[in-house]
Length: 290
Image (cartoon, rainbow, N blue to C red; front, side, top):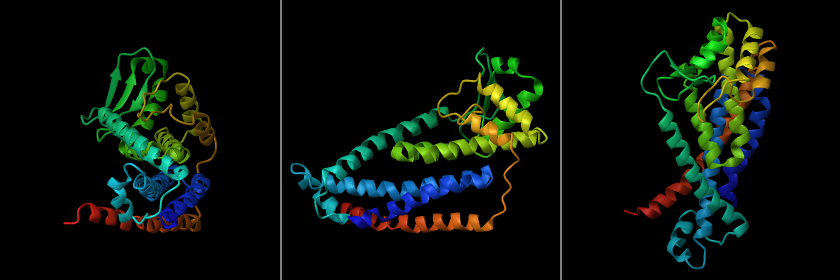
């Protein structure tokens, strides 16, 4: 059974390394690195959890005879301890339900009809970007009335950055990974934070490089704005840390050695994650022998 966890061990080693170094590169680059890491960790971990859960159920006294062939197909011929098997089964079942809920929520919120900015008649300040190819920005009349013209420009530049760069796809990766494996929440939150930092830097560019003004605007908006679930918003995750980052000089990437090390670690994890494919292939062959 140990070989089933080899990819998972590699992924567990990769995650803290990426978490430690991602702030030393630009938010744009960090977002891509974190997205790749989440995908690989999920690819390495989920098959391991599924296989162990399948092996556990396949050796249960009353129903094991119905699924015993499944356990043999993935190479788990020995009974698995309930201490490992029960959590694996629970994670598989609950994770599948949560992933379905995330996908349903994403599809409900997707905007396919393009419009420059949608202004809703709400007194509560609101600003967010809907997921989908349209990248529709939604603001409320309450927000428009509380901001000066140049402050509103900062908010719109931030929200448009989410749509232009399709951050919703990365958010979906983060939400699905966290739904499937709750232990990935810290890494998922880092990706969501980094996406907001990326949009903040785009707003700085739109504001002519005035980092202090953008920081003040974000702090002002964050105190008032409400954010719907699954939306990308200027008042999103980690506002104090984002404001602090804006009050500092921008990150300038200089270390090619660091970048090569990160991508090499990701590549090695990808190779180990692909190891699980032969287990899944064996299962499919047993399921569909014809």
